[in-house]
Image (tube, rainbow, N blue to C red):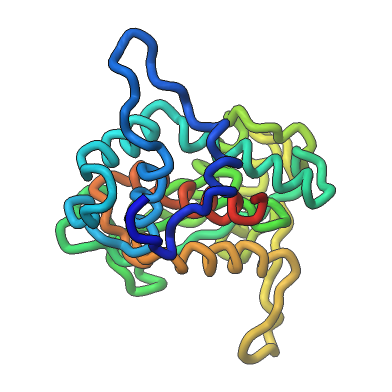
Length: 263
């Protein structure tokens, strides 16, 4: 290994995660690159927010690192690793692998100047960029992510991300309740969730006379998750040409958090 960057996985963390890394495809050349270095390079991009071409020279070639990142995004490897770690975290916290409750929220972030695909203007937040819809369990662990243009409404984006939860391969057999804020409130949205997903929507509203910060039931959990994501410079602004790449970096941020806890 080269320099010990703060974003690097420790040996214990890498060994914990190594069993989830796919083997090299049969029939091709033997894998020569060190996967520990490849993962550290990807996490360096995530945490430090640099361009792929700006990877320090003591990492593998940026083209090699990006190829692993891109291929595993396209074949779903990152999501599989993420979902397995999430189940292990829940078991370690003496929870059932399948959550019974989930929380939805959205976050609008500015996009970089060169990003022009799936970009819109969020009038409520006065932000031109993209909107992140995430669904988390009561531990704040992500179930599904959806990145859209910032002008997509809460209910529309909420339906799309809940469809992903419903059709995902992860264990959601016990899921019954979805907690939302006032932006998702509405009879049509609640009826759709009940008819399509067979779940109940619970709306948590801010008390009208309250001033300043108020800790809202269940709602603080998803806000804390957004706070975790903001610890990665690559996620402070949306630099990705494709929304799918933005979603992958969110899963990677959660992978890094979960593997550090488990190891």
